[in-house]
Picture 1 (cartoon, helix red, strand yellow):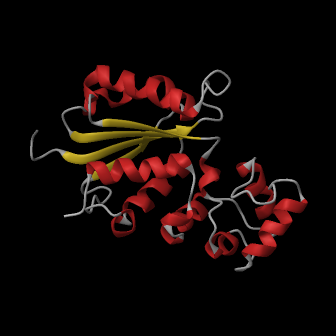
Picture 2 (cartoon, rainbow, N blue to C red):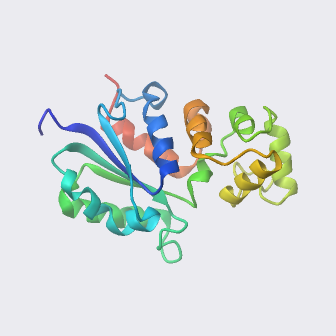
Length: 213
């Protein structure tokens, strides 16, 4: 492949995910990969039709870029994508990857479906989570509140309804919900603290494609 090709193109389902992914890619040491700096070696896009657009049309969106990038990564929420009632996370990933492979990305594409949504990645076991959500650094207090309100089952790592739990936690502290919150969490939280299956798969894919020098 041409040396002028960029390393990576990423297609996401919304602006918040795009910003979070850009922040993550800048943490190459934490990810244990070689540098793939956004803009210089990678580009991150959002689909205008959000998660359903990524699910249904990722292959069409990315087809013009086949000769411009070495690898293609597709990321979107399972909740609201249009297939959440009939397929599990892994089934959706395989379907999207099959379509990408038929459109020029064979052996150099991956789909990451977050189940149920991006907020599942927010709830890592880190004091940074409590601080960014306006709860100081008291993660225990935040988790007790989540359990009291029925969002978190005792012993579980994250709430069953992560987006709803985050919105309510922010509302109580009068902290505005914005993309900058996700960006800060992506910059600060230790990556090993996020145990979500889709996140772990993302890390594995990036380490396979871009091993450290």
